[in-house]
Length: 264
Image 1 (cartoon, helix red, strand yellow):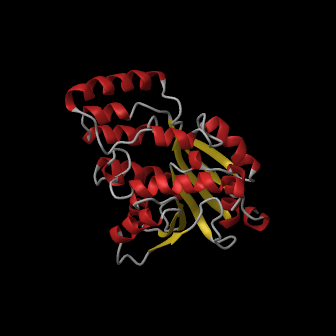
Image 2: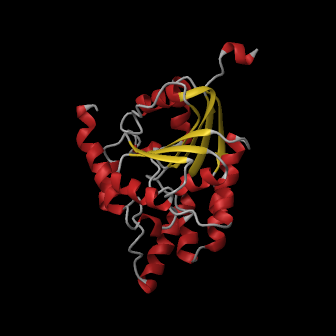
């Protein structure tokens, strides 16, 4: 581990470890059965296809995206930097032989070369301390023709509509009280980490695409997060419906180019 990033990485680990016990209670983290699960499944299926894959899931947290991947028939190795998060995920998926959880750094996975059909992550890229290193590692562990699937967003700058939604939530909470489980991007601890990250001023698809290209990926495609947000709003209360409007989110898919003989 680069010594320059050691303290920051430990702060990141500690932050999410402390949130592990209540993480699924915070809106936007749990993926409940029904419309939201179906929307996530549709987004993943649209990139990975119908056939079962060997998937490396990065920063799996409490195992919610893991659950979607397993429901689609994939075999999953799910890693996280926080042992506390992994404990929740392991308990949640105890007995499922198609998933293995490991403690590892998503920027240096230590997984074998050319092993996976897909690498999937949700809300990880904005936290990377060395994004170029991480993307190179993800390229390395993918088989030729393998797919990278990233769900992320710009958590530093609300959209114009998001700024209005933030004001509306603030006004609403004067009457209904503060949500103790929601630790949004403007919290002091969250912001102190963000200020020290390469994407601290905001992760956008426009910033990420050139880095993905430089790592060697091709067939880069962007998709909207709106179907997932719309599904979230179908079962959310007013406060959480407004939260789906705060930030611009995106889905990025890319491929490690197939070997020459496979393209022929």
